[in-house]
Length: 210
Image (cartoon, rainbow, N blue to C red; front, side, top):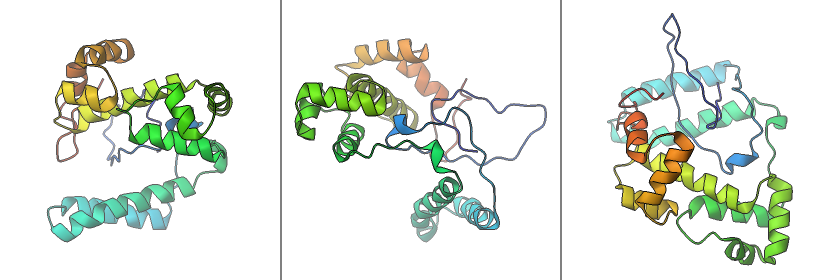
């Protein structure tokens, strides 16, 4: 199952079901038109690769296996996406937008105001905002805000960085502003979000996420 990161779900039921999680992100996020989980058929090739993945994770302390894991994970995800019809994706064909979206995702802590992004795209501010909004159906500011929140959430879950470091790296003025944003977006502060979603080095949440 491919489950969009913005979709709330739970998998609790009366009977236990063996499962294997891969957490990943796609750039740019807002281009995925996926309103619900997508079932991927597990053909023999995917099943074989999945078994290799499970074995490799069990043996991940071995240096050679550890280096192979990212390639195996990437290959498995590519097979999953290749099995899906193209209608699930709406990627912009404009090269200026592609470059801008890539910049936003990789440098969330920098100045991402409309004038700065417009200059990087080689356009006037007004023309850039119109082009961005027409293709993505949201304003550049809204997209930047979403990406910064997502970046901060990942750092909270997957790193040991301090709140000050996370705020700076994600483009928030300070930790207090970050706390207000999280309270509004997730109904909890960054510390509580980290407690719920913390992932250990073994890849397992330290406590169940609600």
